Image 1: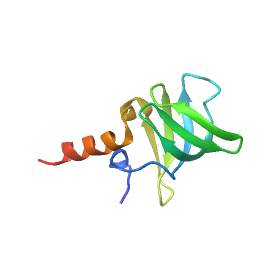
Image 2: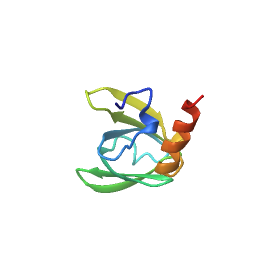
Image 3: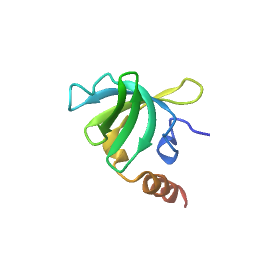
Image 4: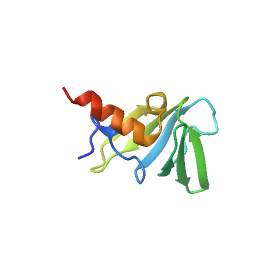
Length: 94
């Protein structure tokens, strides 16, 4: 089950997100649903259309199932999603 402790080991597509901090002031405050993820971008479906937000200089507040929110520094997510998920899984194995 996805939680604030293991969010980086899970798929983010489909989760609601708020850009709580960004180097680009026009990105700050954007909210919507994550519809795609690449190595460097989160693609968010907002009420004003689809936006591509760079991970590197952004902070994302992600709403997890059960209404729990977690803030994620985008710089720790700068990997292809499949590599990010596998990397964190390997660290967990003793």
